[in-house]
Image (cartoon, rainbow, N blue to C red):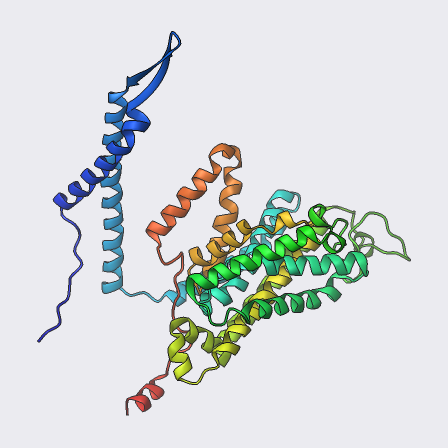
Length: 432
C-alpha cells in the first residue's frame, strides 16, 4: 500500500478571497469600537457618534492588504520551491566570497572614514554584537540550548575588568584572560543546575540568572558601585603607548612615538581594529572547535539529546563546555565594552541586550557564523538609520523584524547542517 502524500500547490483565487474575507471580518469586529464609534462633548453631554465611512475604508484596506500579502508570500514560496527543485546552487561558493568581501570591507573601512567618528563608532558597535552573537551561537545555534540570560556573562566580563583596573591597577591585556575565565566559571555555574532542563524551562532559568546578576550589581554597592556604576575605567594602550596629547622621550605617547600629530581618532580606530581582531579570533576558534569531537557533539546534542546518550556521549560535559565557551566569549566582549566606554553601570546589561543578541542569532540563522554578521549589521544599523524618525523608529524596527521572519523564517542564512559529513569511502563502508 502506497503511503499517502500531499503535493504543495498555490492557493486558488477563491481561497485567497476567503482568506481576505476573514481578515475583513476581524477588521470589522475590531474596528467598530475603535474606529466606527467615537464620543464627543456637546454642551456638557457626552454623545456617541458614528464614523461608518472611515470604518468601511479600514475594512476594505485590511482585506486588500491581506490579499496582497498572501499573494506576495505565496509567490516567494513558490519561487523558492522551484529554485530548490530545479537549480540547486552551491551556497558555500558564494557564501565564502561574501565572507571575504565583508572582511575586506571591515579592514579598510576606517581608512575611508578617518575623520568620521560616528561611522567608526557604529562599526565598532556592530563588531561588539557580532562577537556576542558568535558567543551565543555556540550555546543556541550549535548546542541547541536556549539561553535568555547571556547578557549576564557580558556583565561579568565588563565588571571583572572594571574592578581589576580601577581597584588593583591591572591593564587591559592582563585582565582580559582573567575576565574570560570568570565569565566561563559563571557559565559552568549556570549550566550545572540546568543540565536536566530543556526548551522553555531552560529559557526561564537562564532568564532568571541574567536578572539575578543585574540585581546583584545594583545592590552590591561596595563592589560594583550600585546604580552609579564604575567610572574612570582605563582605556587600552598600544603596547604601552597611551593615546593622549603631549609626550616626551621619557613618557612617550602613541602620537609622539610615531611622529604623528595627536588626534582623538587614533584611539577610536585602534579600538575598532582591536575588536575586529578579537572577533576574528573568536570566529576562528569556533570554526575550529566545530570540526573537533566537542563541536560535533554540540551539533549531535542539538539534533537529538536522547540519541547522544544512547551513543555514549557525555551530555553533561557537552552542555557545560558549550555554556563555558559561550560565556567566556561574552566575557571577552564585556571587557572590550568596559574599556571602550570607560564607564559601566547595571543599566548597560538589561534583558533587552539578551533579547537583541538572541535575535541576532535567530535572524542570522542558528549555527551560521556569517548569518550572525549580517543580522548584527541589520539590527544595529537599522535603528541608526531611523534616528531622524525617532518617533517611528521602534515601529520600523518591529516591521522589519516581521518582514524578515516572513521572507526568511529560517534566518538570513539558515545553515542548520552538520559541519562534517561522511566521505564516499565511509559511506560505502557503512553501507556494507
